[in-house]
Length: 284
Ligand code: HMG
Ligand code: MG
Image 1 (cartoon, protein in one colour):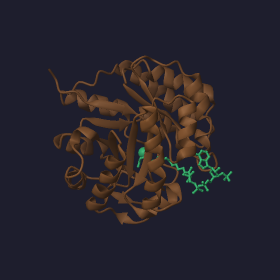
Image 2: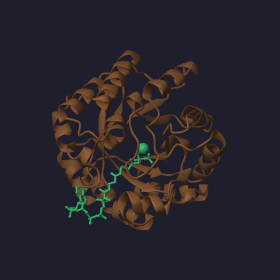
Image 3: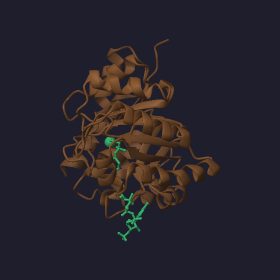
Image 4: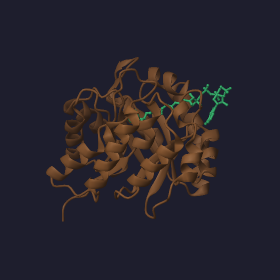
């Protein structure tokens, strides 16, 4: 039996959030509906954040209402605070994600508060989600480098990871937001985080700015990680991280994992069509 690795598709959220052209809701729904047939177990498709901050995600409730839900697929949404959580719950997101940072500069730029304040805002979200039986995923941005503060101390990532673990996040996704990681720096960061959170509860979230995302995924596989976030067509970036290129492309991760002998359960033909659709959305 080959070892299994899961790709968590984040294209419809992390991919599209940064697009300048306001993509029609129907196009987003069509992309999600196609991706729902590819074999993913989790797809992030919405973000209940301020529409002034991220206008592209303003139709998140409509996207969740319009998709054809595939049994066995969980549709996820970002929720920075209680208001976002309430929006996500009303729209019937299957799981939500809180998103913190390992660097103060990025925390300020992205959610307009310190790391500590962001964690305080997440606490009631986690409590409400627990009461509602909705799983919460946690993100940590800038785990390697921050566009404002420079290199991130692995101990700072481990500290935030421990806090997200204590808040009840079922999984913590470690974001190399500006894609400057190298296998050595990624491994050093992971060794620090693994002191606090086991590999089975971690995911790697690599942006491909420097073309090293696949190498960084391989370094993470060696340390036991088996979940990686990716976006079809390599869509994406982060509006509050200057220089952040797209997420590593789902099709590239699926191909590399297959070469390495891992099973992903994905239909790569469907993913190729999704990548084409994503690129057409970007080019339009
Ligand atoms: P704030 O200004 O500190 O908070 O923003 P506020 O409570 O004063 O609210 C400001 C405005 O937002 C008000 O409206 C609120 O009503 C509204 P206004 O008076 O301007 O008309 N508001 C909301 N509207 C809709 N939904 C909400 C909500 N909350 C407040 N939930 C806030 C704080 C977090 C809201 C803001 O900073 C924000 O929306 N930031 C968005 C950041 C974001 O979405 N970034 C991209 C996602 S993170 C990412 O991509 C990284 C990741 O991929 C991992 C990686 O790669 O590293 C996950
Ligand atoms: Mg990201």
